[in-house]
Amino acid sequence: MSKQRVALLGALLLAVVSNSYADLYGNPSPPPPSRVSGREFPPDNSTGDDGTRCAGIFLTCPSECPSQKPGNPNDKACVVDCNNPKCEPSCTSRTPNCDNKGSGCKDPRFVGADGAVFYFHGHAGRHFALVSDPNLQINARFVGFRPAGRRRDFTWIQSLGIRFGAHAFTVAAVTAPSWDPRADHLSLTFDGAPINLDPGHLSSWTADGLRVERSGTVNTLFVTLPNVFEISATVTPVTKEDDRIHRYGIPEGDCFAHLDVQFKIFKLSERVEGVLGQTYRPDFYSPVKQGVPMPVMGGEDRYETSALLSANCRSCVFAPEVAAVTEAIEVNPTVVDCTSNGRSGYAVVCRR
Image (spheres, rainbow, N blue to C red):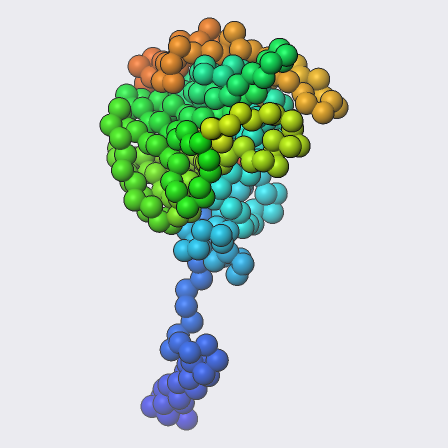
C-alpha cells in the first residue's frame, strides 16, 4: 500500500473518531480535564520540592466538584489535601467546617491540631491571641454577656485581627439587633483603611498578596495569603434555637452576630503560641479534661492582648523583624511534613 493511501486512511479514521465524539458530547474535541497539582504548593528549598506525597503529580478533579472555585456558592470546591493517604482530590466546602482541625465556632468551640475539641471562654469585650508566631499574629475579639448568677461570660468571636509582616487585616461581624440573612454583616479593613467589597459570590479584593474573596453572596469570606494562610469565615447569629438549647438567655436588642472560622496555615515554627496555635507545637500535651461534655482550655492570663492588633500577651512571640533575619540565615528551614496526620508541630496544609 502506498504512503499516500496510508495517510488518506489515517485521516479518514481520525475524522470518524472526532465526529463520533462530537455526536456524543457536542464538542469537536475532548475538553481538557480540570487538574490540580502538588507542585502548586509552596516549595521547600531544603528538600528540592514541596515535601508532600502529592508533589509534582497532576490529578483530575472529581465530577462532583470539577472546579477549584465553583460558580455556585452551594457547590463544593476541588482540593488536594496532603493528609489524604491516597493523594486524591476531594470535594470540600469553602466555608468553615466546625468539626475539622483549625476551626473556632459557636461559643467558641475549637478543634486543635491533634483533633481534640476544647472550649475557650475568655471574657466579653476582650482580645485574645489565637495564633502567635514570629511571622504571624491572629487575635480575636470576644463579644458576649454574663447573665445574673453566672460565674463566667457567654462569649463568641466577634472579630479577627491579623498581622503579617508590616501589614494588618481585620474582619468583624457587625452588631445587629436582629438577623437579616440578606444583609451583609461584615466589616473589613487593611492597614487601617476600610475595604469596600461588593456583594456577590466570588467578588474579590487584593493588596500586597492578600486576597479577600466572597464564597457566598454576603456574610462569608475566603481569605488567602500565598504560602502563609487560608482562612474561611462566616457571620452567623445566635439563633432562638441555639438560645433554647444552650439556655443562654439572650437579651433583647442584639442577635450577637459572630464569626465561625477555620484556619489553614502553611507553616508555623516550633515556638508557635496562642489559644489554637499551641496545639501545633511538637511538644504540646493537652491539659483539658477529655471525655466530659465541655472540655475547657484555660490560659486567659497568658493570651489576652490589649487590642485587636496588639501582640503584647504574656506568651506572644510575634516579631516580624527578628523572623526576617532568622529566615535569611537559617540553614535547615522547617521541612513541610505531610507524612503523618498533618500535625507534626506545624499547621501545614498542602492544598489550594
